[in-house]
Image (cartoon, rainbow, N blue to C red):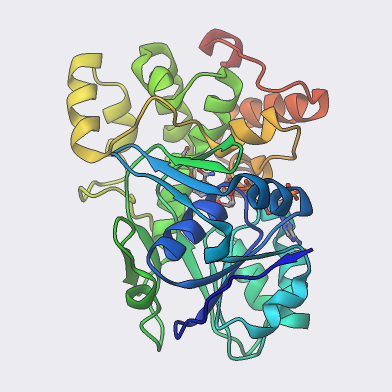
Length: 342
Ligand SMILES: NC(=O)C1=CN([C@@H]2O[C@H](COP(=O)(O)OP(=O)(O)OC[C@H]3O[C@@H](n4cnc5c(N)ncnc54)[C@H](OP(=O)(O)O)[C@@H]3O)[C@@H](O)[C@H]2O)C=CC1
Ligand SMILES: CC(C)(CO)C(=O)C(=O)O
């Protein structure tokens, strides 16, 4: 099924390749900024948004309902044929398939930007799309699918994408969603991976991010898990840049998590906003009975740790618990920090 917009635009045609939480929010913000957007999405999403519209809310006062007349939706990848820019927003496990769809349907000149977590997606896209302009990107904020076509951004931060020949970031920047370019994306992606190690803890806890961060016991576990990973990355001589507005050496992150609550709250507030609805994308995966990105996060750290001979018991145990929860298919298991710690 295809739902076409009823207006002509001079803007580049942006296709959101695999619109779920991030794709619907980012694409919706681009529509709000008068961009020409097509959402390549599952039929169920086309139906939901055709009936209920697309509503974007955030931790400030954004509450905007976008009529489906303002954008196009398609479940047929043929919609990629007229793309100028493709924003890839599928989960990591679906990147290879999406790369093949882009290869088959999108023009060779289309710029392809990965807005995914993990450090390997741009490389997967690059391998399938040689000689094309493929760029890594990093979305720092959290988006939760609230149902009924509503997508909520619950944390702050600006998107960053790799620098390239065209001013993609500038042309995609819209009010309330600036996008920046950086020449070195890999260290930023590793920094985001360190932060994303909490996705699994948050999913296992069943708590909101705010509730989880307010608990000293969860923060200690987050800190210990992150410290293991920092050791591995140091041993592997991998450069890491912490994707926060304050320039912070990576070793400080586990220390900050261990601060007493009053101090931690003060430091955290200076770095980012987290509202009461924010939860990790891995929590959403467990709740919806989907496969998670655990192999691209803790799984990768455990692999690297094996190669470097660094023990990472917490990362390994957390990965195992997520695999159990995936197989059980009954949502977030709501474990305590004591139950998660090996
Ligand atoms: N959610 C968040 O807060 C954040 C997420 N990220 C990252 O962004 C990426 C996307 O995450 P998120 O938006 O949460 O994921 P979602 O699962 O919500 O969205 C991806 C969507 O793409 C759909 N899809 C997959 N393959 C196709 C296809 N061939 N054609 C059409 N639709 C397809 C999926 O459907 P189906 O499930 O049926 O396969 C799903 O609806 C991940 O790498 C994540 O880690 C980064 C920052 C924050
Ligand atoms: C923004 C953040 C870190 C929220 O946990 C995320 O990347 C995710 O949910 O995947």
